[in-house]
Length: 142
Image (tube, rainbow, N blue to C red):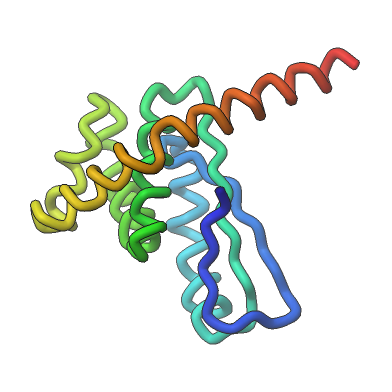
């Protein structure tokens, strides 16, 4: 499900495909996307859509994307996105995403996000990614 940062919809729409464990995605976020959000999205000049693009080479990227989707449904996407990229080196080494986010969220806030993820995100996200992966593979061979 796309995550949308919407302040005022204007003529321009930008789509960002991110893998929260990807170092290049982190670099893009740090060097470009933060500025685009501050200068164009917040004032309503650009409508930004986030798309999950977890790569199979990153073992914890699906887990991070599911957590970000849960946070988005609770109105916390931007905070989680920033926290995931800021602490990427820490959690991408061991998969302990919740520990890395503990410095950003209170225990109660983090529990709320994780509970929501378990109840609403886990199975539907996995099914969507598997379906997309099969579709992509089929198109390659046609």
